[in-house]
Amino acid sequence: MSTSDKFWDSKAEGYAKSPISDEENYQKKLNETQAAFSPGMRVLEFGCGTGTTAIYHAPHVLHIDAIDISQNMIEIGRKKARESNIDNIAFSRGTLTEFNADTASLDAVLGLNVIHLIPNRQSVLTEVARILKPGGVFISSTGCLGSSYFRFIKLFVPLGKLLGLMPDVFVLTESELANEITNAGFEIESQWHHGMKDISVFIIARKI
Image (cartoon, rainbow, N blue to C red):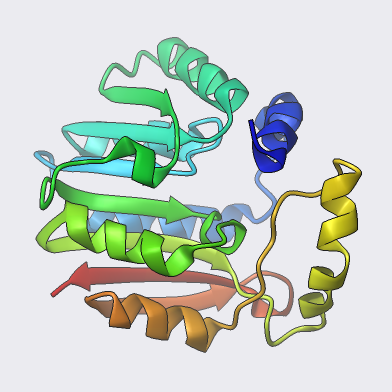
């Protein structure tokens, strides 16, 4: 188990109980995402956390695979789905690469609040493009710290990880993220930012 796995396992219970910090924009993201869905879609959400967003989306699609590196997060997600009488989500522990979906097998992939936590994000974007059908949609929400004073967090990450206080966090700008998504074979259809200093960036992109 990696340091980040252990960190998120330790935070799972508190994460599940914490309220949405920006309810208005969270609802906006849910609505825009569901507008891109249709009932027959097969969806993958990587970095699903405790499954709240997957559960909201489940009634709008055929099936969702929800994966996360934290087993504790996954167990909470399964429990929440059962309590919500949702039976079309399959929760499993693992990374996007480990999930190893078939080429061009999915209609939509969600990567919400996770890309800035992944060291090899370009390979992740390439994998997303591989597993999506032509015309499939990739929806992401990402902390882009590179143009704010939060960029200095990179100085504290090694110590924070050592003390078990932080996961991996990688600094990038909104323009860098948009360029990387485009270079992976996508056309961006919607892009807007919100949150403190507008550091959270929501993007809907379609595979070309």
